[in-house]
Length: 449
Image 1 (cartoon, rainbow, N blue to C red):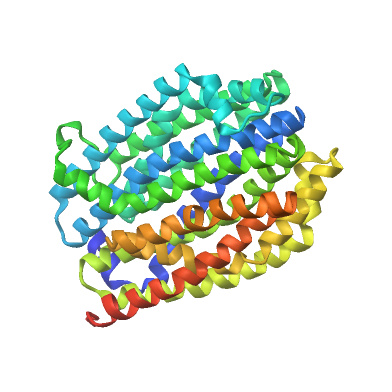
Image 2: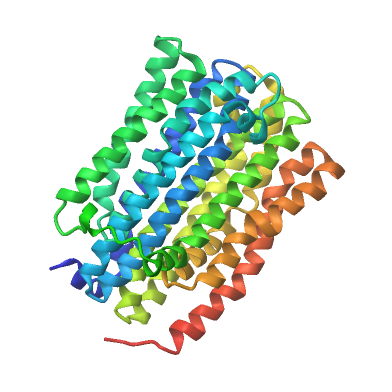
């Protein structure tokens, strides 16, 4: 059974789970090695931990570029393969890869030239600035490989070959964790060691994924001769990738703003929120991984005009994700102090601030399923406008304004309240957007085969 037949005939629940296992693994392992940096660097002190948190906004921006090209090219490829047009899929894959790697090189050069000013802009304080510069140096060198590995992983995923992407991404993550231990605890390289470990692991991951794309069975190969940088191809990339770019860029900007406002209250608050952010990302990445298992099923069947299968897969994912997030939220609420103490056990103030923030965040965990899955469905279907509105909403329409309003009024409590209130507002916006698409775009065109 070829990929097209499998994606358009097998039960969608089975397909989503098959696709979701490797994507959840990828996302959890990615979150794990992000947390590994925080864990190992935590042994160096509160200012070093704060530096990793400050640097996250740049990493989010680099990831934004990778997701933009990966989702933009990948969504098009899924629809093209669903329509059985493999030649256009191959051209899009090569165009996306070449352009993404080039943009990564630009980020490396420009960021390295203005390293210290960049660290200040990201929110480094006087005490965390040296650590931040050390950490950023190798992260910037890794930028082309970080962008490209995210793109390649998404191309494989949208082709229904998520297991192959998992191999490359997991290999890089495991190398990162091992090198963190070696460079920080054995060789005593400090923050520089954590950054160097990330650079090496991202490079290995990118090379592995590039080889897999060229040798994997039933995959679209990355051939440089197929690179066709036309306006039409870039329009398709923008159409499918702009929601991801907006979402990730605003995540970077909101994290940057959070670092600045938290920095007014000291490195302890920055460190506490950085830890909570990493824990929250761990949970979010599991949800995103599950949603990524839905996207190729959605893309193939939407391209094949099997709208009934798109709806069934969507509702299955919403039910499962909401149930799991509810259980996870209760568990994190109970264990919040212990979770924060894993990273800074010798700093009671960081534990107190972080535990309170994590418990407040848990209140809106269950709402994330509807928000994320609606965004993914709209984006995969090529509904750029509503997908972009929803992508803009969380970070741009709600989170950043709430920080401006709540932090001056409530101080540290305002910082802790921003994200859960943002999630509630985003859910209220996502509810009618999702229902409208389900009824108008899928309901009226439903086709049962």
